[in-house]
Image 1: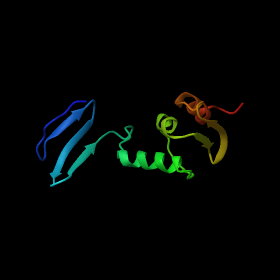
Image 2: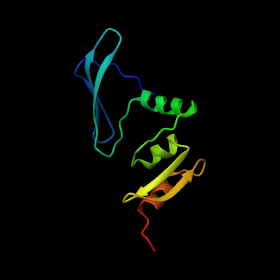
Image 3: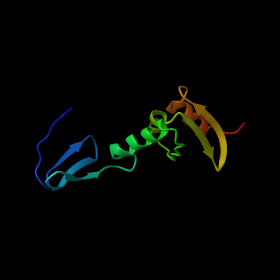
Image 4: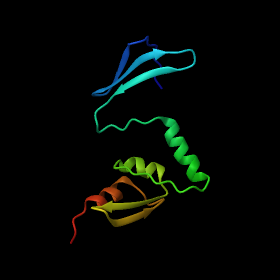
Length: 109
């Protein structure tokens, strides 16, 4: 892990086109702004924690996403829809981004 010291309005650049800027520093929190290309998913960690906790507690969690790697990390079962129709279902541990891509984009024979 890299650790940076930044002041308000200072930023760090990550890779190509990802900027993290300090917007405000409070007593017990820091407000940051993230600028990233649309192809880069940016989420708060507590959202992932809530999804995992809810599923572990037995709740059904419906996650709609087109990030297949994210689905593979978070889901125990993935149902793939194309044009509103079910085209496949994959259950852990067989869930991987390659299999989901194949289901989502294969052409009908």
